[in-house]
Length: 178
Image 1 (cartoon, rainbow, N blue to C red):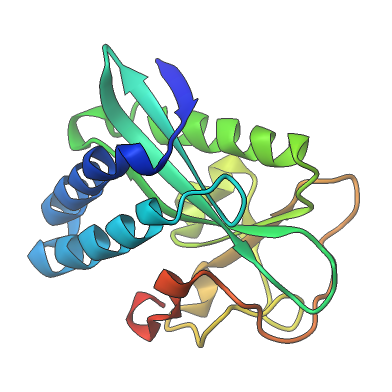
Image 2 (image 1 turned 90 degrees about the vertical axis):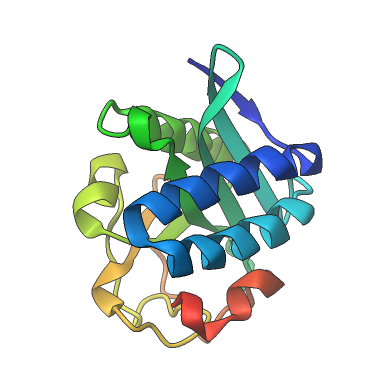
């Protein structure tokens, strides 16, 4: 398996991967929502506000992750991991975990201090994420499932208390995603 940073030129294969994975696991409506989100995020990949990484096997994209910046009032560097997809036939083999670890290492190299995600605590705890209180770090919009708000420090310091709701990249301003 090979990992690589993805760019806007990977938009079509990213959209196809996320759409097929979420159509299969969550149904057509969720697949369509992820198709739109992935298309919007892929168009914004600039390796600053939005980063994406892919796992390839024999030239085929089998997993992909996005990180996007969350801007708080304080100068703490925070990125959100979302969305994540692994090809259906590759799931359960550690592809997603390895790809997330790869992405987190790149964030550490870039001196990012905090990584956040919103998802299944049972899965994301395997890669270091822990439940996060919104009293410590708020989500950009109201959460429908607060138990899925997760974070981890990427430095030697504990998670900081950050005031206010952060600004997120435009595609995540849709309350239906939360």
